[in-house]
Amino acid sequence: MWRAFGTAILTALLASAAVAQDAATMKKDMVGQWELSTTERSKTCVVTLSSEPAAKGLKLALEPDCAKTLPFTEAIVAWDVKGLDIVRLQTADGNSVIDFTEVESGIFEGHRDGEGIYILQNLVAARSLAKSMDQMIGDWAMVRGNGRQVCALTLTNTEASGDNFQVFLKPHCDPQVTGFGPTMWRLEHGAMMLVTPRGDTWRFEADDNAQWRKVPETTDPLIMLRQ
Image (tube, rainbow, N blue to C red; front, top):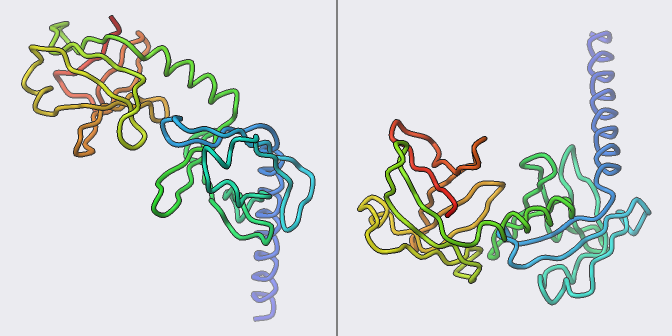
């Protein structure tokens, strides 16, 4: 019995050490400049995470306009890693303002009640995404796998509701497209999302031929091509 008890204690200690090591590694990896933003990046703020200790956490710096752009950031004075993988932006007392978890390599999501989802990602990667978003603006054709065009549409940088931008269908679109009725678009984790006023979405992902294919793909795929 004592041997089993000792084994359980040793296992717990090793697990605790592993958690501490993972947290320390994550803290090291997080040091640097990050972009805090809404999902579609219409509102952004640069956050610099430091390895220097602060009250109940580590120091950070917010660019001057952060509180104006994202008002909840006014309460943020430090950051820390909680558990295995939670990046916490917190008050001086260590209370959470927003917690982030990694959803893709280098991309973290956090949620605030009544406000929605926010993204934290490496500043260089975020600015690369912004460039990609600029390249998406303009005229597109939606075609079937056989090359038959079913709709022409224009993606704009005009803000719509939520975290989306306006999209306009041109005349003579296929009934499947007009029936779906997208009026908005956004980039979400590298995918192009067409969004209806009801909040329904079609998701398109880029392939190796610089085309955007609707997923999940069917035997008669829909493909977006830049015009």
